[in-house]
Each structure stands twice: as structure tokens, then as C-alpha cells.
Amino acid sequence: MKILLLGANGQVGFELQRSLAPLGEVVPATRSGLLPAAQSCEQVDFHDAESLRALCDRVAPQLIVNAAAHTAVDRAEDEEVLARQANGDAPGLLGAWAAAHAAAVVHFSTDYVFDGQGERPYREDDATAPLGAYGRSKLAGEQTLAASGAEYLNFRTAWVYAARGSNFLRTMLRLARERDRLSVVADQRGAPTPAWLIAQVTACVLARWLPLPGEARRARSGHYHLVSAGECSWHEFACEIFAQAKAAGLIERMPEVAAIATADYPTKARRPGYSVLDTRRLRDTFDLVLPHWRQGLREVIAELV
Image 1 (cartoon, rainbow, N blue to C red):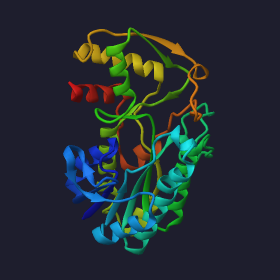
Image 2 (cartoon, rainbow, N blue to C red):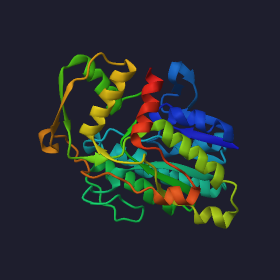
Image 3 (cartoon, rainbow, N blue to C red):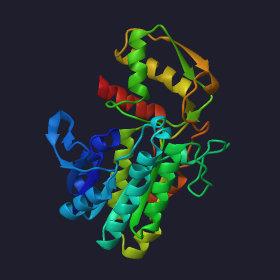
């Protein structure tokens, strides 16, 4: 099987290169045409419909895995057209190509499609109500992909981090070396989810989904929530990062971490206050066990060590 992997240089895309390898020939693609260490790959402009179609025609994949996105949440407020092109229009274009060529699509979405006002973990069929441009663009992508007629899996995830790239974990480790005291938001809750877990679960699900006969595979198409087990606040996550990093020797001392409210840390884009996602459908459908977020963090800390 030939697998076209879009966004192969991102946090999740990097991990997917490894996890998808046993399933077939992985053809990575990035906007720059480069992978880490300046290795060349396919080049594509995610804001250009013709560029995407031409890439699909050239590679002729049986599976398209779309890990590319406009992920700058605050910048999206000023770049909603660009965010819509990459996050909203591109998934529909990929789905339309896949539907016309008997291919399947894997896409990744976000907790930002919800307004964060819930009091229990969000299920796949709960009402969506994005608070800002980023969430609206990602919801549009879910809708255009669903309307394309392709067989697809859409994994909503949240609070993604990794040993590389720009993310909360790496920011906290840098600040711990620079400051004695930090302030971190304590009234937003979610489930920190490492990129390696998203990639491994994606590969595991595909290994069980793709061999199914047509009707059974179509019945299992659609939205799934993919996050670590458990939940915490950003403040709790930061404290656990420092505790594990200190124990592993990554930092010499643990800074003091003050808990603050979202109102004390204003941003251009509003964040959901409650981003916990219910993963029961994913676990039951594909017989999976998802590790607790603290275990996921231990794996990433070990990788950094």
C-alpha cells in the first residue's frame, strides 16, 4: 500500500513516519519539500487546491494521512482565510480525490471544535460550537471531508506535545532553566497527549480498519476522540513536567509554579475551558487501551533524556 503523509515534518507527522512504515510505502510531503536534517521529500502548498490535486495524482496513494494544519491558534484570528484553506478546504479536496480513486483518508482535528462549556468529557456526537477562527476552520475541515464521499477516519485530539517542535512541554523545560517562578493557567482542563501516542494508535486502528470488507469499514468511518486517559489543568501538567524532569536530570531545580486564571493570561483567541474528550468509541470499536497522561509524559521525558 502506498501512503501519502501530509505534514510529515510536524510533531505528529514525524511520529507517523515511523508508526505507518509497517503498513506500506510512506511518501512524506511538506510545504518546504524538506524533512528534518534537510532530507528532501514531496513538496505541496496546502493552501493551493491544484497543488494538492497534482500531488495526489503524482503519488497515487491508496491511503492519505493528513497531519498538516494551520495550527497557530492566535494568528488564525488574523489569518482566517489562510486557516480555512489549510484546515477547512484541503480535507474536502483530499476526500474528493480519495472518493474518486478508491482511496481512504485519515485526518486529525481538535478539541477546539467545542466551546469548552461542558461538564463531562465530550462525545463524538456532542454539539460543536467553536470559539474562534482556528476552531471554525477545523470544524469546516471535518464537514468538507464528511461530505466528500470518501471512507475516512477523523481523529480529534487535544493538548498535543512531543520531544521536538514547539509545544507546552518544551516551553516549560526552557522556562524552568531561565526562571525561578512561573505562572500557569489552572482553570482550563484537558488530557495532555503525546504525538507518539497519536501516531501509534493511528497505525493500530488502520491495521484493523483497512482489511475490513467495504460495508464494515464504512460503518466504522467517521469521528473518533484520541487523547490520553485522565485529565488535568495546565498548572497540574506543568508541575508534573517539572517533577519528572527533575527526577530524570533534565533540570537542576523545580521552579515555583503559581496557579492563575485564564483571565490573568489574555490571548487573542479564546480557549475552551474544558477540553476533555470521551474516548470510549475509539476504545470499544478497535479494542484499545489508552495510557494515562502521566505515563505518556514519562515516555517523552525518557526520550528527551
